[in-house]
Amino acid sequence: MLNLFDKLNDKQKEKILKSLEAHTFEYKENAHITSFVKGDSFIAYLESGYIQIYKMDKNGTKVILEELEEGETFGTHFSTFLQNDFEIIAKENTAITYIDNHRIFQSDLSTKPYYFDFMQNLFTILSEKEQEKNERISILTKKTIRNKLLEYFKIMSRKNNSKYIYLPYNFTDLADYLGIDRTAMSREMKYLKEEGFIEVKGKKITLLKFNQVLFTELYD
Image (cartoon, rainbow, N blue to C red; front, side, top):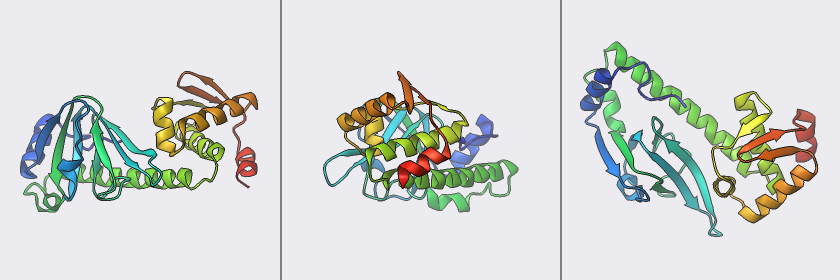
């Protein structure tokens, strides 16, 4: 994911944040951040740390919406969550800089070339987030656990242009991300291994029969 301050040096970043009246807050590990952001129109930049954005579905199942680390961005207008329908927790000590959306187009630096770079980064991130949202919908709308898994594998394989996938999650968090039961997911993974579709070594998954014909047949 693109960094919001890509192509900018530390001095330019500092000037932009001052112009936008940005504020940085620090959170301890396991702190709930949600109350700090609900009801606001904001852009948030992770200066350091790691956060998890999640919701509980109607059955009480935890569904991970996003996991973000240092250098990544989220906000009310370009994240995969809906306003007031999410929780945010710091998975480790975390520092987040908040920018009021309304200040973005009111900056006295708007004519500066580096501010144009900042805005270009922002809109690129917006586009990437929209793509992620569409990918997430394509996963969650699959009716079976098998097809949710295979859709996720397909998306990851295309991003990496490889049959090898390195999971960014542990298997519990992967189940939460896919919105499925951990035990049921493990059982389906076992079937996929036995049927020769995948090979699993830790967080590395090798797709052994990955081609478009296979997925068309599975989804029909």
